[in-house]
Amino acid sequence: MALTNRYKSAPGAGTLAALILVLVFGSPWYADWARDNTDPDTAGGWFLRLLAWPAWRFDSSDSIQEIFAADLKAILVVALTFLFLYLLPGSQLARARGTLSQFFAGWAAYVFAGAFAALLTALIRTDPSLLGAFQAAGDGAEYGLFTGWIIGIATLGGYRGRR
Image 1 (tube, rainbow, N blue to C red):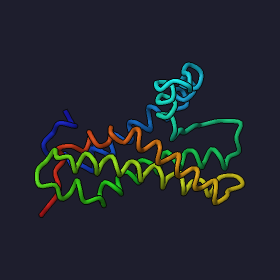
Image 2: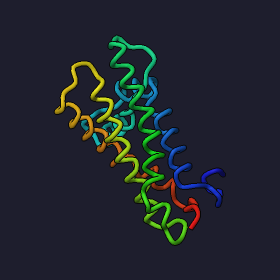
Image 3: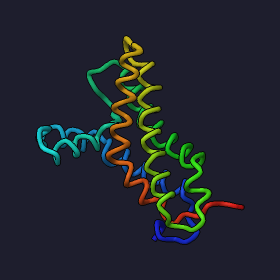
Image 4: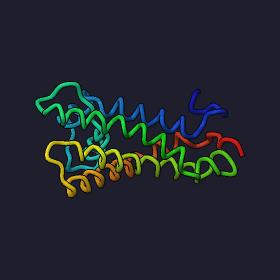
């Protein structure tokens, strides 16, 4: 019912959807399941593995720096989604609730959030490089492009704020 409430805000609904995506599909349990039970050479397997991109974890054989970077990436995806949803004018300036501008603003916000979260966290990983940061940003944008439609749908119908 929360997503159909006529008083919801577009940034709030999109951020909640992003939080659910990251918590559920970025969890260590889902990431392990996707890695073990899907075929990366099929479209469905590729997509199920892509959903686990902003993976967070508690323990690993990686260094503390790598674990911190992965966890920070997951947090930044959610925080930057809110920031970009707030800053992008489509959801705020739409003449009527539920227009395509809200959908595309939500989708674009998730693409930007994924790219910037990956770019920022690539710089704190072990042995960072500019090329590695650019490649990570590309991976984040790819994640946002193929999963951002979910955020776009969540933002539909949100109020645009004061005139």
